[in-house]
Image (cartoon, rainbow, N blue to C red; front, side, top):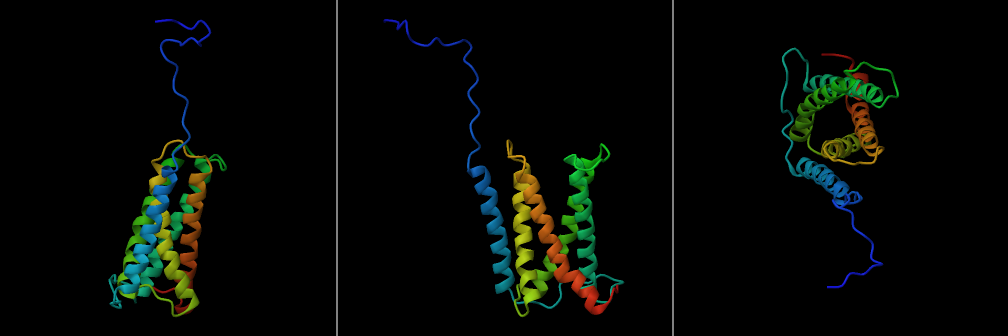
Length: 194
């Protein structure tokens, strides 16, 4: 066996491998899941025969009032999550527990939004009889798709620093539009009732 005197020497132990660029699947899988969730909810809402009602809570005058107050509660916690996100990213001063506030306000917002979505899909379905209702239906499906993508991206390592705030901002914006086309519309049309 001969040794090439001009060959580069290898250091021992071997040097660490260079960091690879993130795989496109890291972004593709959450995007595909988001699309599947959004389309799945839309298809279910369209083919399902609406029942007219799915739930009602004692003390409320109608299911519309229940949905509007639950949607407003979810929107309030989404606002808390937005402010706490600015604290976490250092854009606003905040307490050390701002990250916990951010996580818990998001969890509460989601848990409060789920019964509203279940009612909308089961009792009303995906409807398009007015522009407001069409946008509300489409945005509702899109919201849960975008939220699914955000949850998957949270667990990913080595994401670009701008990606999670962008997706979180998208989820917040869509929830705001959903609230505007439902709860705010209800309160302006029927009054702030319980």
